[in-house]
Length: 349
Ligand SMILES: NC(=O)c1ccc[n+]([C@@H]2O[C@H](COP(=O)([O-])OP(=O)(O)OC[C@H]3O[C@@H](n4cnc5c(N)ncnc54)[C@H](O)[C@@H]3O)[C@@H](O)[C@H]2O)c1
Ligand SMILES: [Zn+2]
Ligand SMILES: [Zn+2]
Image (cartoon, rainbow, N blue to C red; front, side, top):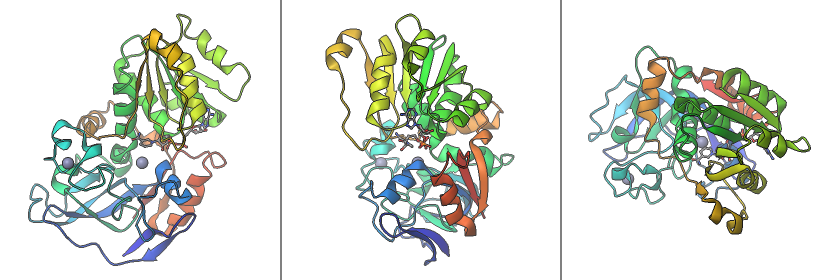
């Protein structure tokens, strides 16, 4: 088969590789019908993720069709359409049993296995470990584009942003970072009926998208002098109830600490590569809650239900579509997202 193979920092190519085979009885082999690229794949290509060894097929998101089922994965049958989740779950370890698959103990590397410790979804076929407990069946009437981001960014934004941040009716919510993950946090914050959703980014196109399609009520460009005062003016009782960080750099998390009101919550989603200064001298007495984490994916079935019911529309996240043999072109567009007005790119069979 063909697949997008990581060859070390800065190096990748669309190569011919052996087809995946069942190795463990819980494996399921899935033909990839649609996949996509994540910001984390760009981190891997920069050399930021040491666990990914050269020779690994990238990708941890995808929708596909089951083509082979291990003898202990009998809930699925050849021909089933499934979502492949970024985080796989064994279903039985101490963490998976309490819905914390990000820390699955059965793999030796936690729940993020695909496109990290083993070959991922940017390929014609993928072997999904713990397939029976990990894959999600897709309702027949949904297209790949309507469901694909349930693999990663929609549960990430909802679990690490909205749920950790305890967004509640009437809240003022600030989302710093209007990339695909921040936009997904704006989309799923709306489940809780906040009063305001204030989008913050440096990119005016993304801010416009945030207001047009993702539920932001206000947009503030953080490249502007005095931007924090603009945000504070929208939350005059001492700041926002919830600040969701969806960038992953020290200055944006530090801004969150400045924008949250007493008794508020800072929910970090961003992947950080550097230490961040936490002003505990000021925050402890303000009763601030700070949360962080790797997504567990436990809300995926509920999110699929909402999509099926027409209550959640993730289609506006897709700005570009390619075929599998154009994978390197898809990477070019996604890695220069601002220049291309790109959000997510779909890559289909
Ligand atoms: N916790 C998890 O489980 C998890 C899962 C997936 C992704 N992530 C992380 O979430 C973050 C966002 O992902 P994404 O795919 O949306 O990334 P992205 O790079 O597409 O989006 C980041 C956005 O932040 C904006 N930005 C950059 N600097 C800024 C600044 N100083 N002020 C305001 N905005 C700024 C950029 O313009 C961009 O729109 C990344 O760090 C990613 O690795 C975390
Ligand atoms: Zn991802
Ligand atoms: Zn487990």
